[in-house]
Amino acid sequence: MSSKDAAPSRAETLKQSEEWKKAVEYEITDHDIERQKKLLGHMQAAKTREYNQTATIDNIRNFAHGCGDDNPLFCDPDYAAGTRWGSVIAPGMMAGILNKPMKGDPVPDEIRALRKSLFKGVHVFVSGSKWDFYRPILPGDTIYSYNGDETCEVKQSEFSGRSVIAVRKDVKVNQRGEVVAVYRILRVLTERKTAAKKGKYSAIEPAEYTDEDIAKIDEVYANEKVQGGEPRYFEDVSEGDSLGNMAKGPLTVTDVICFHSGGYGFVPYAPTVGRLAYKNRTRIPAFYIKNEHGVPDVAQRLHWDPVWAQAIGNPMAYDYGVMRENYLWHYLSDWAGDDGIITHVHDEIRKFNYMGDTQFVTGEVTGKREEGGQALVDVAVRFTNQRGDETVKATATIALPKKQGLAMYPEVPRDLAEEAARMMARHWELSKK
Image 1 (cartoon, rainbow, N blue to C red):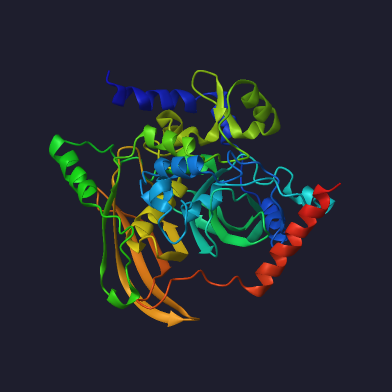
Image 2 (cartoon, rainbow, N blue to C red):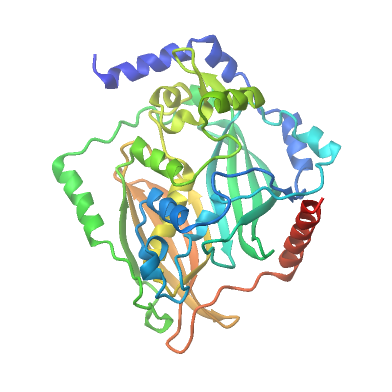
């Protein structure tokens, strides 16, 4: 029996276990939905400690490399010293994986009660995001954040049955109390049992490649261009211009490992080892599901464990949605050059990116305008896999330099700046006690 034939039988064995049956018994209830809606608008200090709290030359480079990005603006201090920034800067979306605990007032009892065991045991995945960027992250910058849920919508899906679409707003603030970025994360919560029964994608076969197929992908890699230090001027850009071609893949488990190694922690559900894993398991037992050998392991292992992925209704393991979001940043920043500034990104994750899949990234300029003293270019980007499926749809706004002036970040909205200042003032006040 080949390994390809063996995996489904192991998945079926797992599905017959009491552990699996227990794992898929959790449901999205009306009570959970009502509690979630009552939480909307409550913002609080993020007290989680990510793998990285302060940006450094090394962790900026490692994060970029974890996304397959070798842009010297992020990776080469000698090169970056000659740019307008004077040093390496972080890829903007790195703000999402930097966090030092922010001190804040205790969570009110009524909020704590609403959150207790909320959506216990259901499957959560990222389906898209919106980013607004206001400042670069430089080596030495420490990032704090505060967050809260903004919206909650209930939907019926052919694949996952009843699901909840929730948007969480994360405000990222540096040690000077300046807003760096606002990250809105679209999360989809689904019942594992429903996903496992539907099997909508069960007919999808793993991608197979010949040497000629790999050579065609390699040709895309070989022809990718980093705009770098040659300014892309606003005056030289026209509607309909192509942003070029980029490849990402074929996806391997190694890619997922590199993304984690680059700093993606998935805190507070981060993969952990030994005693740390035991402590995490006692804290959030519903997040740990025994594998077919009886060993407790994280539910998120569907990103590298084909048996668990198949047990809950997918044909094979697949990437984190945020991996493709960071691939999107790579594509945009390659085109924008050292002097361009990505100010806004909106992406929608349309389909899974399975192990073995290759993403081909294309984009075009959809418009250009001058607004608030900025020269702005709007673009549309698509990720298409080797099957011809559109897996990511995105739009972005990029501030480009004019021949008589630099591109600048947008101003932080006054109410947001005041909110961030209050949160950081309370953090500093509590830090003195």
